Image 1: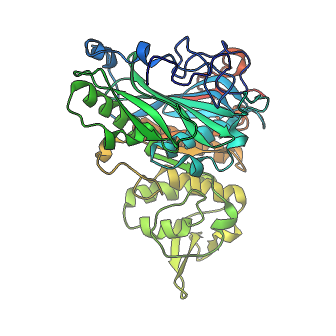
Image 2 (image 1 turned 90 degrees about the vertical axis):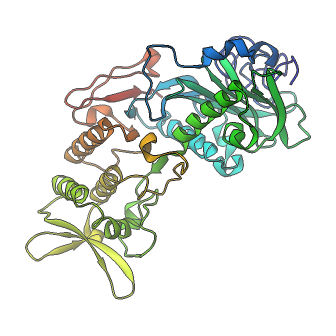
Length: 457
């Protein structure tokens, strides 16, 4: 990669939309470095020669002695250096996180960035992840001399290897591609990529070796996340290479175990074919999943019925899935007096509430997610992304749903990141505005363990 800037377009900033080349520094957050080509507006990462270090600094990447790190990798921070309406934004993430604020404040775009990182971590191509990449570019972004614009996102994952940071620079125009990536831990850059030749569909990558040669260099495709490709490229012969693999695995495990959920009531009202029994993101096949799961875990199903009883109008004795003569399956509420109410008769709020309760009470084997098969389930934590968590719900339903989410998150195997229009409308949850009203970790009243991130227009 040489000693020049990994992204280097001198004099230009890296991600268009962040004014001033010095406003935001390196992709990893470190100071210095020239601009990022294809992403004007934010400064680029420092040169490889000053950031990829030798074997005697390997210990810097390891968890500090006496510091406890979780066994299950989990995202603890989402960074949107320049993405849609967000600039220089850093959001803390807890076991149960609520993004709160009015329409247009960027709640949905924050969850969209999280989902994008998850899909890239799962190996998806950048074109699949960003079907409309220009919409992700900050509105006032100005192209550089080559008419290139883009955006930057990143995250931190804590786990057995300690905090591991990932930052990605994406060029949206004139051609969609990943132009830079940095994976780092404990001050050591473990992987760094840069677009060196725009005419070729690849980036130049350097990863930590700590052997006879301090780094290994090789080209990687510019349409995939390099971190997700490392297990196929790194031999693992040296301590440095094994450290790179461990950090990459921790990042990928945390990112792949994500279920993005936004229930669509119109799809839940109709009978559906009997299928795989894995819940889709829109929950259209809710009846099929109820039919499958009823016999699998009686205790969880009893919790589901209890939650539905608390949040739906009228008496609820049971939630039943019925297979019809044409091979489809429908779900009904058993009222306990001989009357069964089809889901088609329920209100939109009741259906969204029922679907979200089902999501919280199930797991990777039921939800349509791509868990890491080579890692034991006990080492993975499923993250549910729920945009519009309070959409269409009344105060009782919101309170029941938040309480259930908090209880499930306390167990450690599930995490929830949701967006609500007004945190004051969620019973039992309060919060404090962060610096400038952009970020904040709020306190709670009545419901423990909730992190509230306040956003302003």
